Image (cartoon, rainbow, N blue to C red; front, side, top):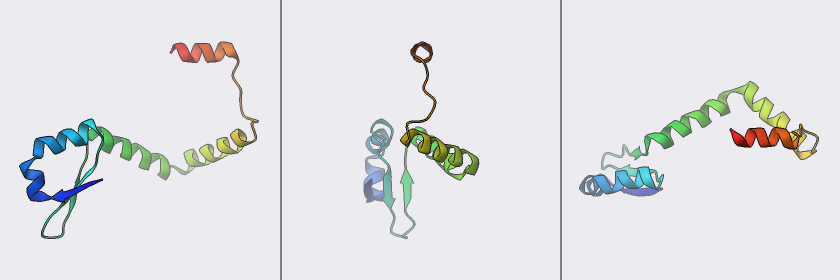
Length: 90
């Protein structure tokens, strides 16, 4: 994460916003008042929100945990080659 003062951020606003969007870099802006803030792309923020939703969804997390157990035992569902080909065409 990039950290910089609010003055440096303000002086180079476009460059830092482009970096946040193009390079998916979160930028922490330090203020004299001690109330820092973060600049990140909308895409990255939405991705973070989706991740938080999944992590808070207990039934979904249980399903993921069960899937991991079957994966580690290599006893999970194994699609046929025809099914894989169909999935890959989507």
